[in-house]
Length: 343
Picture 1 (tube, rainbow, N blue to C red):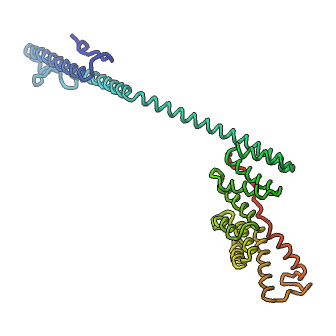
Picture 2 (tube, helix red, strand yellow; picture 1 turned 180 degrees about the vertical axis):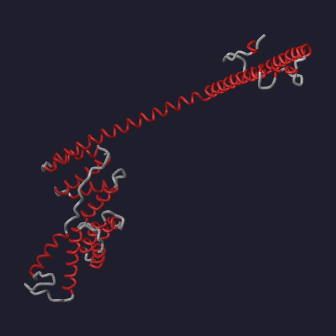
Picture 3 (tube, helix red, strand yellow; picture 1 turned 135 degrees about the vertical axis):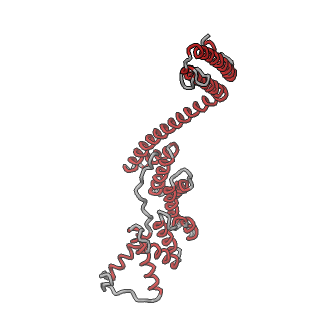
């Protein structure tokens, strides 16, 4: 009986691999013992009959030397069987893992697919809404440029209600400007304050809305209220600090707080990053403060027609002061509006 007769069947329906492995090992050991015994018997008989010293090496047949003949063939058969057993063990382990955790793997894969698909759909909806809001904003701005205030106001109100946060904030700023231009100061203030209190709007636009609201309150509210509205905006890190300091100085000047106005203006004029138009208006207010202080001390005004240090006559200086008073009442001009990216 050959070696193949002792090789077990390795199918999925066979007994567990541990049983197969033990049985195969026993069969191989018995087969090897019988083969060695038969080879020894033949070698002894051959050596005694013919005196062949090549066949007798310490009682081990030549064909049974380790690494040659029968031993090499049996080693190769052993390796092949062990590899098959190991492969069968790996397959059984994988089957056990799949039976135990396969459902969770499928659920996790489906969850990843659903999340990715949902995120892509959300991005698509956001882009579509941004395009729609952008077109509506352009149309409303064109109506405002054509002096169709009522139609523009209605269009901007619709954008505030339905558009993404970026375009809604820009529409509120436009509405505030339209209401202020129409003399509706209370409605304009309401739009600016609503934008300033919005958590969804861009921080830069919210700060600008606070600035505009404070500018509208000058003349109606006392200095303390205006100063409290602008405290955060006058910080060195604020992008609107120059405009905010200008408004604080103007409010203090109108309230008769000349010392506060002078101190704020000096701080503003020392800021080299302040816009040139803001610095010019600050110089006008400072000139008015100095002129009033000189008048209070009884210093006689410069003679008419006599040139001053800058080469201007006294009449020209008075004209410049008059123009300065008009400039000091001007509100800070907003920077050009830019559309928020992705909105």
